[in-house]
Structure formats: C-alpha cells, structure tokens
Length: 286
Image (cartoon, rainbow, N blue to C red; front, side, top):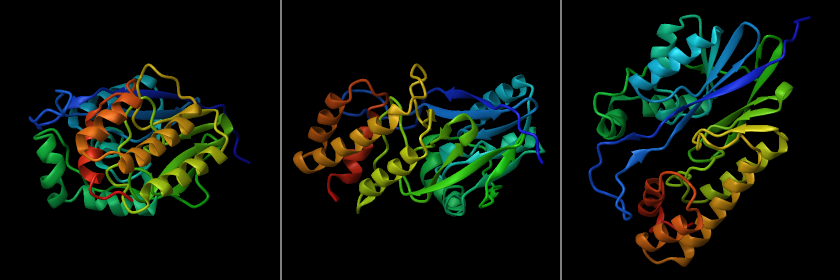
C-alpha cells in the first residue's frame, strides 16, 4: 500500500505581456496577453506543475520558482492545447529532466496543431516575435486512472469544449483542488472567440462538470493575482458567458458589444479579449 502524504499547492502568475499588435482597441488600450497561472502541487518531496506558460523568459521565471520550492518535479500536466498553457514545457523538461509531461489525448491533438511551424508563423511568432521557445509536443496521454503524487491520486477530468475544444481540468480530491485551466476565469475577461456554433452552451456544461466535483479551491488559468482561488468563480464564469450570449443577440455592432460587456464587467482585466470576441462572433451569433 502506497503511503499518502498531505499535499498543498501554490500559484505563480505570469504577468500580462505586450503583443506586436499596434492598433489600439476601442478604449485606447494596446493589445496585451492576459495574466497566466501556473500551479505547483506538492507534497513533502515531490511536485506536479500544471500549465507552464508561453515565453522563454516566463519559462525561466517559473523554473526558478520550482527550483526554489526544493521539490522534485515528477510531472508536468497540461489542461488543454492552447500554446500559452504549454509552450514553456520544453525548456522546463530540459531544466528538470526527470519530469514526465501528461495531457489528455484531445489536448495533445490541439498541441500538435498549435506548435506546428505553420500555426506558429501565423499566430504565436507574429504576436511574440523571438520570444517563443521550440515547441516539440512532449506530452504523453494521461492514464485513465490518473496518476499519483506521494500516494494522492490526481485525476484528469475531460470537460469537452470550454474556451477551445477538448479541454480538461486536474482534480486533486484529497485537498479539494481543481486546477481548471481555461474552463474557469477569475477576474479576467473570458476568451469566447471559439464559442460559435453551440460552444457557449457546451462551456456551460463544462462548468457544471467542474461544479459537480465540489471543489474547495479552483485555480483559473487566467486570473487576477489579487483574487482568491474561490469556487465562486465557477458561477462568475457562468454568468459572464450568459451575459455575452445575450449581448451578442441584443447588440448590433462590435463597438456596442465591447462597450456593453466592459460596462457589465468593469472589474475584469484585459478588455482586449472582449474586442477579440466581438470581432470573432458578431457575425456568427449562435
């Protein structure tokens, strides 16, 4: 029988970074990337890192943070295939060569697309020239029964579409923790650009799945670092999606949608994401 130690977790926030986009959004801001959360779950000796960030510099900072923890990094878990949740995995595996990278099979498929030379050229290297590390897909499919950290089971829970297809959350039942990736947002505007054609309804179903786990702590992939990891963020994300769904039907222009969403959620960081949503969805309500 494997002995079980008590786990804890900590969160590292990679602060917003500018992109190469020079045209301001309607409120005059320049387009920046939202803050990104990387979670370290740890026991007495070993640790699991969830969702390494995006750039070479961010990988260095997260690596320093892991090193300072004094823990042996056993696994890196990736909640979904968007590049800002895994591009730093390669440099971190080089720095911590014993770490095994895990992800869901649907996530791995999207990772292969996002990390390809063609996709990088069209998006990531365009937005962040010279800042993205090599992006080999190192992830192995996570075992169906989950994996262990010092006798504690960590389970990958498939939730389907949220802010992209094939997303998961990582559930740590022993401490009531869900590391939610981009299924749940916390004080940051939610990326809805891929939610046409029923995606918002599917996202609401994903939130129901997270809620059914009865977590005591929910770490969002994009969060305001001043806010706690409260399960209340599940309902807050649900309400945000419902507000966007309604306003996509009630407003008649991108500017009108942008202003209405920002007025409803003035406390959320990075309104550039609302402008992305407006441009992606105003002609695709549904």
